[in-house]
Length: 214
Image (tube, rainbow, N blue to C red; front, side, top):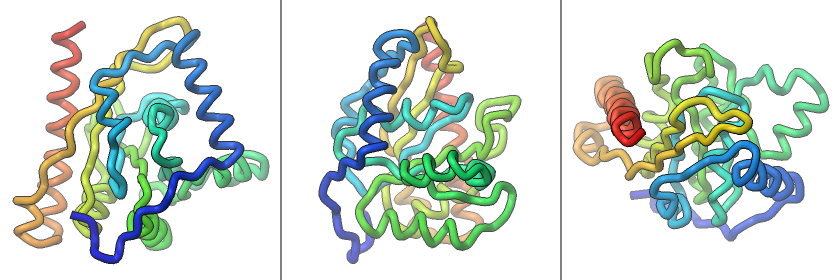
């Protein structure tokens, strides 16, 4: 359940996000084809919530966000993307929340909590990098901590393989990861650790199911 002071915002459509979303939808239906499984779970997404994804390439955020019509998703991204002036302008207008990699960034945590309090959709890649040798080998605690503090659903999306040109990529949308039993234990280091393990197990199960289908 979201916090009592959460207010659901109305749909918004900013020019750059609308353009990028439309461009990506075109790519995903043509030269970079994606096939979504259970896409209705994205169409029916009820904010506030946290959208999770595994991360292999730069276009992954829009693979998660493009089918969502309710709102423009706020993604957490690495602060290095803001060092170039032009790129900084782009990512800021795409609502990215910059975070320092490998450090406790309280400013970014507060910005993420504000997104959820405003009734928005927050996008996080809990691996923290595109270069992990194994799926969810390391799961950063930020997403779990935010979900437990804000009491919002964690919705996993699994991208099976790397999105690339002229190759169809399967994208699986899972059900929200259960955490009521962990919330009953209180928000502490142990319950957050257990939720991180649950996130990892969820993605392993989604990967195994995808392999069985293909």
